[in-house]
Amino acid sequence: MAAILAPPSRRIAGILTGLLWTAVAAAHAQSVAPDARLVAEMRLDAAREDFSLLGPVRISARGDLAVTLRQDAQVRIYDVSGARLATFGRRGSGPGEFQQFQVGGWVADTVWVNDYALRRLTFLTRTGQLVRTEPMGPSMPRSFMPHARQSNGAMLGMSGSTIVQVAPTGAVRALGTAPTYPEWEDGYAPGPIALFAADGQAVVVVRVNRLVPTGGTFTITRIAADGRVISTVTAPYRGVERSRASYDSAAARRTGIDLERRVDPRRVPPIYVPVEAAQLGPDGTVGVTLRESATSRVVRLYTPSAVAIATFALPPNAELAAVTATRAWLKEPDADGLTSLVRYRIDVGRGRR
Image (tube, rainbow, N blue to C red; front, side):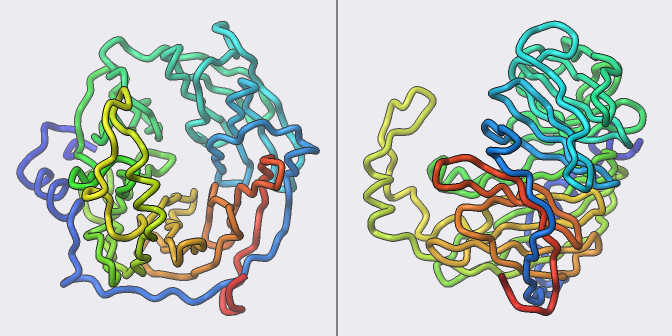
């Protein structure tokens, strides 16, 4: 830990500003993942579970799910069979209450929840017992969003597009800056994607190297907490040309903090964002959501050593919520806008869904 938490040396700075954020295609071959089929195993039905809008979903090493329900100010916990273990929380400011929050992750069998309005962390057991509440220190950046907790109590997360570590003492150290694309309008460019291992011992960064109509590449770089590059892979994406209707729609929109100006169509990229999202599983699997056409998306899976192991199609309007090498949890909205959570088995070599 000392190397990455110390003031950045030239070696670490080189990693974070060079290898981490740029393509290294010359040293790493592109990977092609075999097709896979999704087979439904378990469904948490939105109507039966009385789900409001689903927020982040976090999976533990044993397969338990912690689900964020912001409208209800609740955290729901389910075991691997889909049985509800706990409903925790309500609106308020007291112990066990939430305002603006989301589940951050798991530390063994303990769930931790970040409330960025109340500026505190709440810890609870998998059966819904309150363990403790920890206030965030006054030195912590207001924009800090924690994503992982290390064994010494330090937090890793994002402050804007900057990856930061906050020590238990409140000391804040910048570890690098996730890739941004200022040449394109907000909302039409790839967002900064930085994924954090639950134990805070690795950060995975996904970067789209260029937006090319004929197709280009993206890079996945996995960095250990001591600054070592664990793995890097550069892989292809398919360029999907933006429709004329999309340009017209963009030109009619307003942007900026106060919506003070119109979107400049010249700063809208010629293709749809190729890498829309990514998830990091508790087993180290990375799932990257790629646009395949104007209306379809696929997920490509990579092992911790950057080997592509599967590609499966997402159902229409579905979103990847969590993933491992063998399972995928999808948010699936129905015609009424209610979103269920469905777990699938990933069958490799049987074609796409």
